[in-house]
Length: 485
Image (cartoon, rainbow, N blue to C red; front, top):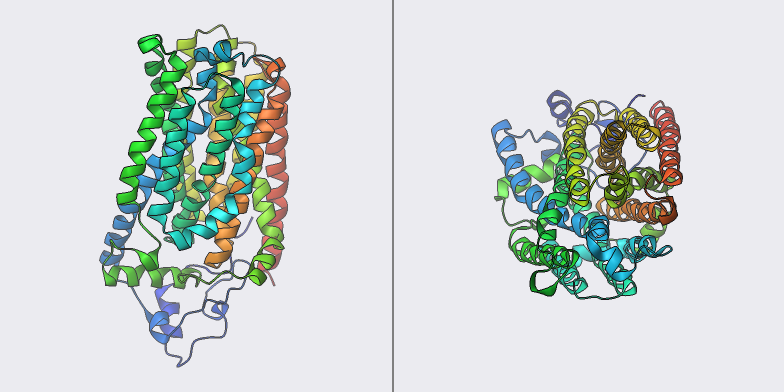
């Protein structure tokens, strides 16, 4: 498929220079961009001849991007790592004694506890992404991380499965403000051809940490019986304390939006803003209004991107929550099941980073989305139907590689096709909110009575990957048609 991204394309220096001789800015950015790539128009246009003729110093540009990378990606990735661990560790808790102690293996109690997280998570995504501009990134993100860490600690003292479900709902309300805010923040700093690799680095740090969470869980499980507390309670208590500590560090380190940052010099900030305006014309924040909000909700593209994200997150959540149980069903011990969960996550990180780099270089995100969804389907089928346990385990590798690579790919796909900061804030919230529906869907389709193979749940995940393939094909064809106008 031809171009997948919005009408703003990278501008060659020759085109930049030639257009700068005009004494007034062009009416539409498409007049100065060498090749149009989609249909969306945005009111933010080059504000002056100086902006049009601006040619950054390559040395300064490289140094500035390195500073942005260092100040933005590691702390967001570290904090989100524990957000994902705290969200998806229920499978480890289940096999580490929680199921027996709280009778969570009765009926749908475990699935209900998994699902409880996602209802408030979905509802509060949009309000959170609007609030972050007013509160400030460091205060907002560190505060909610502190609160969800304390919630984790409190869960270690709960004695009923209903209490676990309730506190997971509270965690969902708190974490609703984190992932969409991080994706929105990253999208405001980079051009479209730089975005997916950074989103992948941020997100995949959490995936890698999530893979090693099984090893951490095993280490904490060995404290079983210490101070009269069960192993699963130690897992919650210590992981909650780590999150609290990271939240304090995050308050000191998290960078704000480009127009509010404090770690770049004036020239470096100017360079970042010029680069964004040259790429898509929206470096400055445009104020939200009810009229804009309604128009954003009516943009069909945003909801289509949401469906793609939904389809990507279903197998991701399912494997994170149920892989330990699936592995135990193959005759492995608790320890083996916890330790064997890590390698597929490591493989998925390496694969996703490679494909993110290639997507940024080529811009052909739709082709990668389709191929990665097909890879996930192959892995799910191996996990469900292979007779050999080692082959089933290999299926987890393929399934995770496909779905984890698609998550940053979808986020970059929508961010590069949505112009305007206020619109991208709403779009990120809606799209990532669909990920919450993916969590509910996986919890409802991976039913306790289907353990340990979860065949109906695996087929439900396959259906989501087919949805990705079909939706991406139609969207790609739509973009090609619009590009020819």
